[in-house]
Image 1 (tube, rainbow, N blue to C red):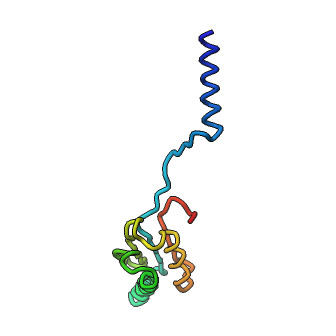
Image 2: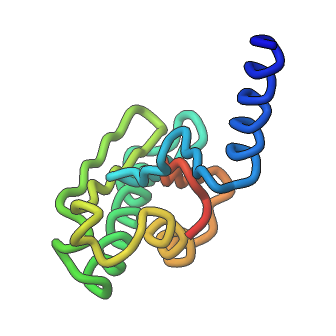
Image 3: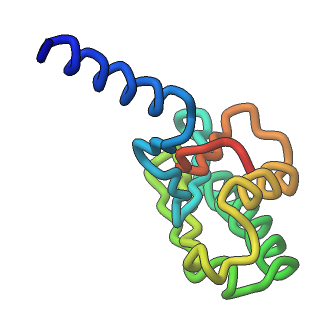
Length: 130
């Protein structure tokens, strides 16, 4: 009898959970506070080309920032050059005050840039949904 009651309670609990009446969220989706663009030029590229690529990456980001809220969107920009690789990181404002999501910023950044077959834009976000 005890086993039967235990099985019945167990089945009722499973039924309630799987019916959707109890919402189970394992981990909330959290958007990243930064977006990164990395461009890798061919090995041995002149430093002028590397600097021009950095300027194109930061210039396109600056145009997006000016159109979409300024410091309410991006608080800081960090660039790093390592031989033939350029990395630009945009640190975004808090999610409560920013005017665009990280994914939306990354999509606009991709559209604003000239076509680079070797360019990686990484929104570093959990979800690709907007």
